Length: 326
Image 1 (cartoon, one colour):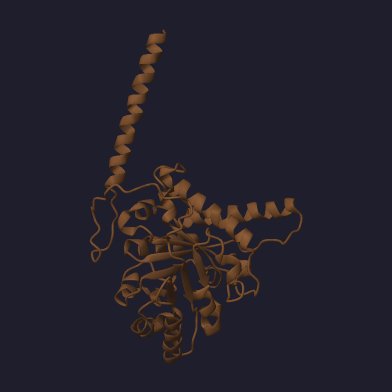
Image 2: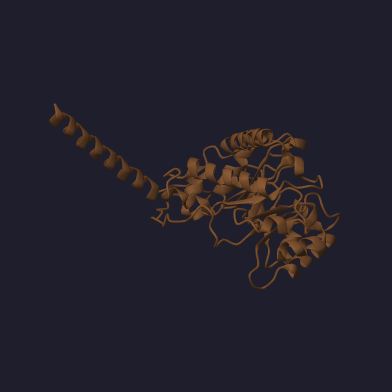
């Protein structure tokens, strides 16, 4: 009886090993369906090092300036972009992205060299009968590198659902654009008592988790494709802090960012939360929520925060100069 049990155990281990080899082969031949201009269909992906830590220290900080519906005209947009360019130092500079309104993309794109061009949205369809929409194809022709998807203001004022955002994320990644996916809870009650504060944080984490699950549905193969490595950025923006004149505390922001990174590793890495699976930590998680030239120093000291999504402060020279040079 013991001999039969040992034989069964050996066979079971052999089966597990064969499944592991098969999974590794599938991982090495990771396919991503990309539009014709990128020609990534059927690209064999070489095995890569999986020794990255959860908090990589070699990546540059990413600063995304979201101009929203500002400024009033092209001349002002060009001038503002030139001022941002001047604020970016030649050495040890963060990665800076300027996301102006669509009508200024071409004008701004012509005057920036150190900063990258970003868009505030991109429709999931190609050119066609989509009145009022801007496609990823059109944005690529304008040399757009980054696209903001799922910003809370679009969710609130334009009724964007997680299903719509998911379509945009998939389309932008397939097009080879870098996606800045915005997630964040709409409210969080202030509390001094630790028990209540922890309960509010759990509710916030649950809300963000559901957003991530829906917004990143069916995106695993794209995210893990080495041709698209570092093409997904997650921006945590607590909605109650946006434009409110007060930000989240750095400690609470770090707590949520850690949670988002752990969620990402557990759900999108082929090895889950194992040390090998932490290769997924290449995804940056940035903070956005009333960041300005004064409070930036409170956040920048935390290595868990990979950068910032900046709104109103990105329109004021004194503010964005401090943020870039922090």
